[in-house]
Length: 329
Figure 1 (cartoon, rainbow, N blue to C red):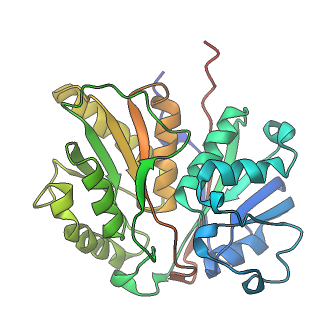
Figure 2 (cartoon, rainbow, N blue to C red):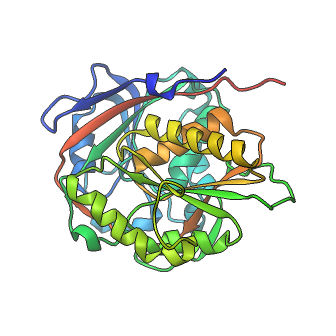
């Protein structure tokens, strides 16, 4: 069965709107200083709301608001940088046996991508059928085209846990699809790690704001030597709305189908480095079409991220992510 991802539910809200028309059982958000994270948290109607404090933001206890007490999860062990350890420890502190019966909403805006991906992989594993997802578009990045999201160097490039593919030894036609964001050092690191694979980039267009597309391209050109191409053209660049996970998933399928028709891909590597909304697009494609195949999601890991990178809220999106039925074979 070929699923039409664009039939999945999505809705747009203005910053002053009430978000959603229901009360969720559980709402999860990753805390940071951005208005688009903190203000949305206040809007959500949920029986339980949980702040997850990501270790990568390096918050100290005295930097967190007093309101972050009972409903705050702060894991101080160094293993918190490992996505599976952090998420499993958090889940163990709530009633995980009933997760599949809960209505769940996640604000993905402030999450670290590997932790976000593993959280959804865990939900899939325990039989959660669907998850509502919130993503907020900013008005602008604080440093515009010079915005830095990471604060240190890449210390490892590896598969995200739960997304390790059944790779084969033949690597003659390996392909990497990169969701290209602003951080050229992440693009460079992951490209060098898979130096022998061909690279195709997906850019966010339309972008979150009109000027962001040009800023994104300029940053990608800095990394073009590592990518292995000297220019961006219709052979190695594709486009999907920066705030639409479903179109992103459809574009990835289009790329893979086209490339397989020309010459069968040996191993496929997916690397989401653009918006969190597009990261969910990579996730959806993997869960629906890549399980048990020579496909993995890889990521360049840093340990320090900037606490606040944006100003304002321009739009708030609500998506419903449908999970595929787990095979019992």
